[in-house]
Image (cartoon, rainbow, N blue to C red; front, side):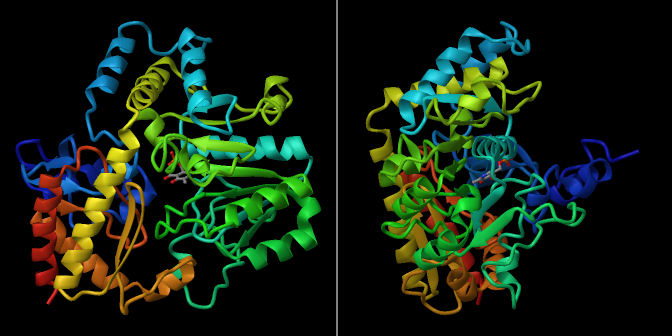
Length: 441
Ligand SMILES: Cc1ncc(COP(=O)(O)O)c(C=O)c1O
């Protein structure tokens, strides 16, 4: 028998109880590293978490990115609740499909048609299959540190490999034990923001490339924006060689601009993958492009499936979320202001505490990492990873959590801000972070 609810009064006890029935205590291996000090959530509202010990924490991880309006947005919540009274899953086309698809197509520059899926991983896997069947080629080019989900042909060692001495940016290292040998044989990896490496690769292999896939802002490792001209270079090289350019906008979509990174940087990919913000916390993803790029799905020559793909509850969330985004013309200015305030107050805090830190920010997407030495700028994730003091950052995270601020303990993981991160809350968080830094000694 496990402990009763009454026994589980502390985070540690509660986590032990969870571990007795959930392998490792979490339902995602990615999450295993996220709780060095046990934290078990009871509720979340705005940008605040409440744990089972009844402590309140300001959250900068925000569920890994879906909540630009904070947790528990009423419009989305009420819409989905209503959908549950009308039948939320039939496995048949629904009038919501047209509404949700039209909103994505209206807001995202490179999208005329979409398919919905349940997760970013599924949507990426289907996108790459579509690119392969469309081009008749197999090779997929990825970039170091970029994450595209955990499916068999794309999961490479990402953040962890950056800390492994001796690997080169071009080494494709499987991301998990038990992957089929050769699962990544059709994958090449290039260093991020290295125009020369990309040009050279395309000169030698361009005619074999089915797709180039990337996070247009490298959000998953250091929030590294594209170097000036880099996205356009990828656009030109893929167009010239007959390959498809795929922007994985699972994080950046509807976050760094209304139309995502493709709008912010003015480069249109052939295919776009979306999730997170689009569903406001409900499990939904999409991939899409212009009609020509989606043709083989339209003719059923490409395969994409899923019982729950595009279920009516998820699409109701999409309609509520994107409808709200469309109705708020000043939203991205407001988000930019939240990001700027957070960045300014953190820079001031680390400066007055005399702690070297590296901060990158694109809108409400931010990277904050304690470093061994000040770093002018980093275009490349390897330079950034070499400068980061990972163990000190982890200690900082532990102390911050005790002071009432939660962020991911891996220094390469992004911080996510929302309209719920008001100035008052950010100032309160800065006070807690100051105490945590002082505690580092
Ligand atoms: C850029 C990117 N692509 C794909 C994925 C995979 O999405 P999911 O975890 O929903 O499968 C993620 C997840 O964080 C992501 O950040």
